[in-house]
Image 1 (tube, rainbow, N blue to C red):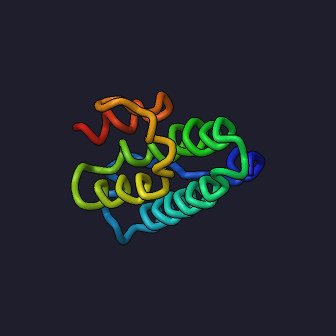
Image 2: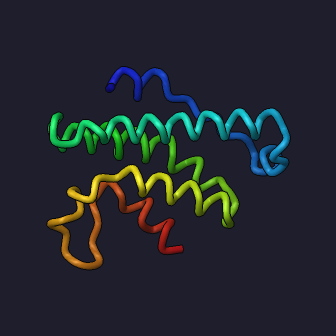
Amino acid sequence: MKKSVEEDVFIPLYPKSTVEDKSSLRSKFQERRFWSAVKLLSNVVLWDGIVQEEKLRDLGLSKLLNRYLLLNILNTPLGPDNIEKCKKVVACLPERWFQDLKGGSTLPELLNFSQHLLQ
């Protein structure tokens, strides 16, 4: 999993003006790469309870979400597409990771994502 996250994930960052046209090849490529990375995130967290939580959080959140997915989300204009991306990422996260958190707090690896959601 670590090798896949570190070597196989690639989401290009194009200028917003380039990807605003959803029919452009760059936009379509960027979207395919984003959704491929979301699928990898969902597969990584399926190992919850089998692989140490610390290692999964490092791979799934620190590396995959914060390094790749969040950059794409932050560069997606606010609106339905951005909301859909955020919902899919949240749906990947195991509820168990949040059980011991106190109200209003989140996992340290999710601070930037949480701030985006609050906006």
